[in-house]
Length: 298
Image 1 (tube, rainbow, N blue to C red):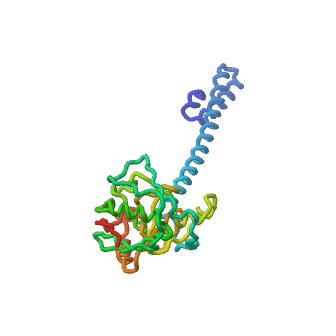
Image 2 (image 1 turned 30 degrees about the vertical axis):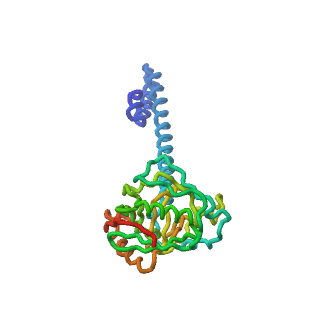
Image 3 (image 1 turned 120 degrees about the vertical axis):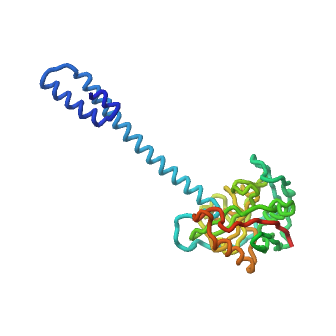
């Protein structure tokens, strides 16, 4: 029984093993070898079970932490904080020596969600400093001022996509309503949050205000209400998806700021955000559907 229980329920195998040895010692009956084998196997199974349990718990904790880090890097990920944004402001802009000197848009392994050509490579002018544009949606006009002086390669990309109709008749697929992250995300023709133009390009402001190894690149800063920024899945992975901040939000400075929503248009964002998400979560599809009809520069 000790040997059998060693494989079925090890603690019971230990009990039967000790009972068997005790009886054998008193009566001199045979079976000592089986009883000892049952004890040894039972103890081994118990030890291995404990080790496997500990390893599984540690693995689950590490996996949960990796998901937290991944989600923290997603624009608009709604974390567990219930406090208002308390991060540092965006850093002052100091033009890098290479600003706009060589815009590059290399192809990605993922195909474009809609046929489109990459913008011209090479130097991008930083004048005019600001370029007005309209994002026309079925919920109203959202006027933006593109910051060509700070993020010329990003602005070139946005205008190129707009001119080619890449954004036309696309829905804004994501709304976040967390305490410290509040934004509407658009720019994916597939509507899944994974689509793009089939190419990528590097970050600009505010990422270019830090050294690559600077720990401050991972510390949250406040992206103020009205910010227009690029969504990405990591440095240098910008494509077509962008977000509109309707209330001060915290993100690490790894998302390019390339414009601002004009004051009159913030009411449109407020109305959309007021409807919350379709499933009632803090991060999901807007309950009030938003479709971009067109984007045009003025």
